[in-house]
Length: 131
Image 1 (tube, rainbow, N blue to C red):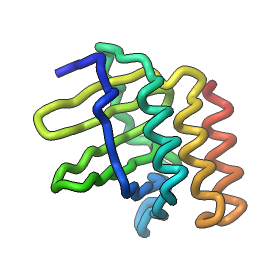
Image 2: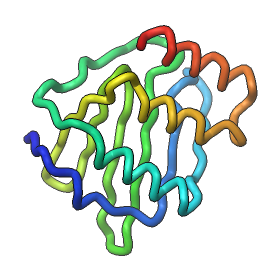
Image 3: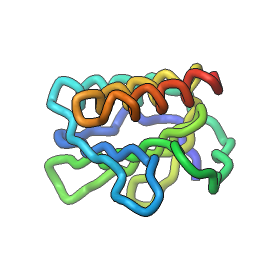
Image 4: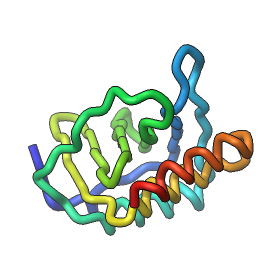
């Protein structure tokens, strides 16, 4: 199902996972409240699309998952990769265009304090190369 309104997205806790490793756990970190608010602002600014992202089985960097939790038991899942964002809420999957990979780049940079400098450089190069 595709909808064009993401204005109702809310969260007060966000956990971000960088999908990068094979055979070991991917790095995960939490966003502080001000970054959570910025993530929601950026999500609300995305343009809806009917185009579902293509799946990829590549090795190395594959994208970024985020779990957005609100006051209630509602959880929203977000996956951002290669210029697309997918938002999954109960009973709905919504696709967005991440023009210039701006959201993806911003989310990757939120992990700078939790990732090695080599991982950050590699991921940013992967994102920048495909812009």
